[in-house]
Image (cartoon, rainbow over all chains, first blue to last red; front, side, top):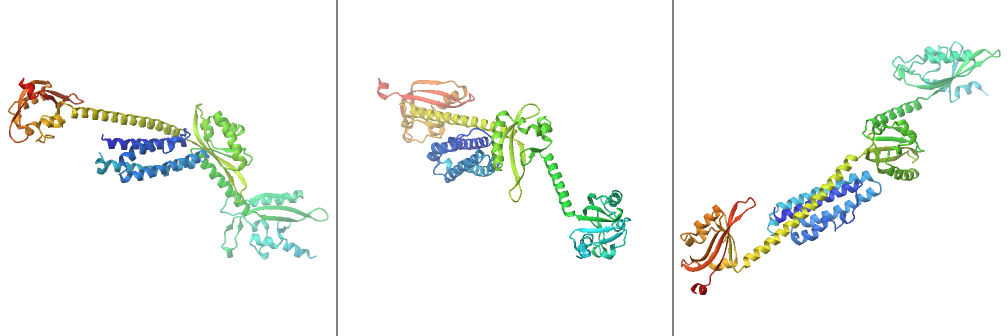
Length: 120
Length: 412
């Protein structure tokens, strides 16, 4: 496994963890405010890995915007859940899934992008 | 006062019968609701004029009508008929057949001076519209009940006071508690005590404000275990916003909840693992960099030869210094340094590669074409060939390590 694959895999795992964590909160699990902020695992990836190593990639900005969007939407669903709009919050996961599909397909794009390989 | 005129125009349907049930008189309203003309009725046998609808078994009320009339004759008291279906034959001019009708009627005896029944007055009311609506409502209720029983949910309804009016059978099956008991004591008795307390507060709030209630509750199954459910209770209001009833639907979300928790745990561990991998990778990478720098900057000469052809894979600065005029990297030794083949070094390398035995040479004189000019120069060197093993313990190359003995000491 080369360093890019390793970095991208990390982001993929962190993103999936984000979805898992959100689902868990919407099913009564613990809410962790930091997790759903820029200081959460995905946000940290951008600070420590994404911007320093891959800022020249065209997909990185879109990934970052998507992630901000996902965080915002997650907070919205959590607010719905906390206001006893449980079914509405569960329904909202569909929109998260759509954005997540885009997020993951961007990651695959980067992995297969020869431009990214020449960064090293 | 013209009583005849009054009788004709009273807004209630009235027909007068003789004690043998011959029609004596009928007012306008009566003619209207029965779709008959004056001439079609007067002097006719009342019961024959309105026969049963032969196509509808429910329309068998001629008998009830006769009974009521006979009752009135006998008791000389008003006799009330329950709502009865009595279909009215439609005149041929309106397509014939029967018109489905529901009626309410009373029979009042009109007595002469001796107290004998002189005639009978039937006061009748067409209540078809009301009865059809009632029938439709009961059909709707049947449909609701059927749906409620068919759905994989615990369903209940309460009246406007919050008292349970209906529980579907799933309650009994799931909780093992008789629905009668649940209706009497409330469904809260099968909730987890912690949730029951929250539920009481939340329900009081929703009830006071006519707002929807959603909350997660643990409901006790007949096996004695609690499973997580999502309860949703909605107020049903009419067009004017008036509360009609409450409908509750409770969905089992235990499996989903469990799955979500398990996934979160697995993914949390996965993330930790991937962080470890990343750290380990970084550590290996930095150690590799240190080693590489050590080798490259070393005062001795180093190179790594890879594969059975002994291809130059890595050359440090001092090694390259021996051959200032030669490109060595990625070339097999025999091609890069053809002058050493006849001096026997390839054979030695082959042996190390095949046997794994190291080779040590001290103060060896070697002839080299250092500047790629074809002119051979003599150097005195000490060196070692060390086999390199991969993770499967298979030799993949040879590490060459050595130093040059300066000409001065050589001369000494």
